[in-house]
Length: 93
Image (cartoon, rainbow, N blue to C red; front, side, top):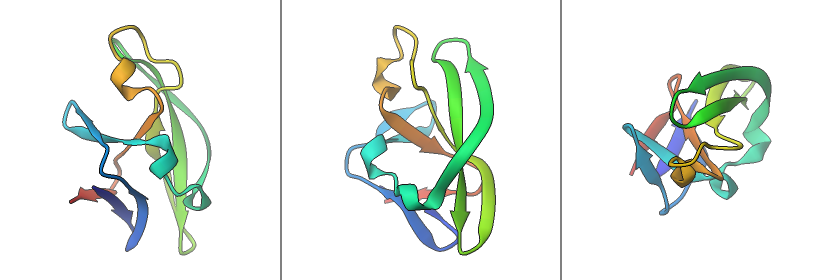
């Protein structure tokens, strides 16, 4: 699977986990040179608190486009150490 934004591959892996319609990539598959810090946080009732990263590609910013669960709740361990995407990031085979 590949995560692509602004015509650039942001992450690529054969080891994704599908949860609620989203592919969660291993954290190691994320190309960190395209990410920047975000203060944004949200709460999921069963996965726990999500943290976010923004994308910066070719001078364009996509705020909070990457999310992950640094400390998932029991029962959501399958997303530990993984990242997912939204806000126009295309995930394709």
